Length: 143
Image (cartoon, rainbow, N blue to C red; front, side, top):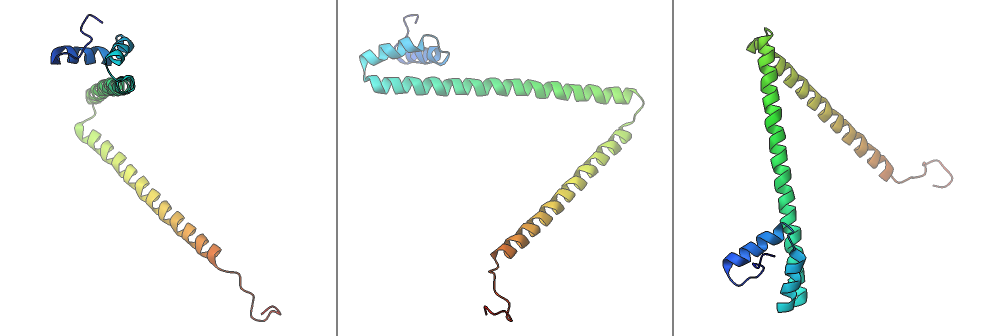
């Protein structure tokens, strides 16, 4: 606890929160604060603070890892592009390949939209059929 586990002034309070956010003897600090004030309020404060600070640290860590993956992926794509250019492919050929892939994606999206529309119409038709009340035919004895 390094003797700074208190909230007497701004510096020691910030140091105490910093120490608590890294789970360095946070429960001892919480127990010490319970002796000096309302036990339930200090317990709730420390538990919420520990959960929120650890959540923030996890999100920060995941963000840094994802950023590094993106940088590595971009570097790999640049290396692949340079390798293709080194093999004799021109930038125009690469652009044509890129545009062909975009056209394939657009066609797939168009087909997916048509399938969704068709499926929606079929569902609407089936719902309409299922909502029709069964009526007897006019020439039946039950009419």
